[in-house]
Image 1: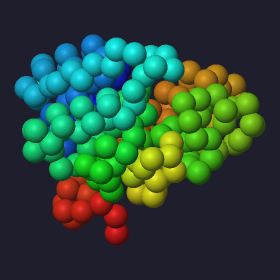
Image 2 (image 1 turned 90 degrees about the horizontal axis):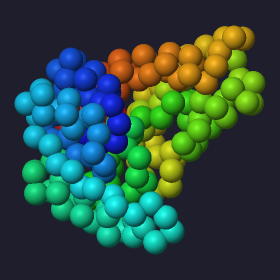
Image 3 (image 1 turned 90 degrees about the vertical axis):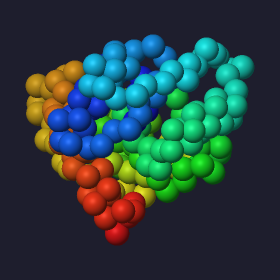
Image 4 (image 1 turned 45 degrees about the vertical axis):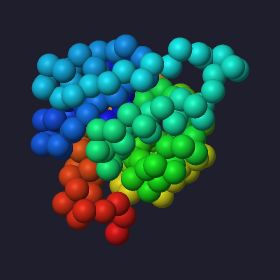
Length: 184
């Protein structure tokens, strides 16, 4: 699993029985602490540049090397804050999964919940998809709708979406593991 934040999706994965072999973060974060506390191997492939000089390809290659070095064959991003490029696709293409807080293909990108509210939709949701080179465009593996209430704020709606995500993402991963492949 690739994490950047609190590790709540990681907790959901562990609670659901998903066999997590390694947790990697792009920055020091609570997710690494949670993984270590659960007895899961961790690695920090730290991203030190955040501006226009950031070498996304070099970072993606370093990350792919760390994952391959641990014998990883399926990668689940869980709130991972770095967009990955060709070296990760070469190493894990079709086996790099992500979750997104909207019903793709609607509201791609980092501010999906805010964008859904601004657009005035009555239903949004959560999508589990294969990550490819373009942000939030890969094949959809699972989706679940979440109603938008008139009094919703970005925070209240996002929390309801996260509740679905913490159930849908582990279930989807367990189905993939059971089948031994991504897709139908």
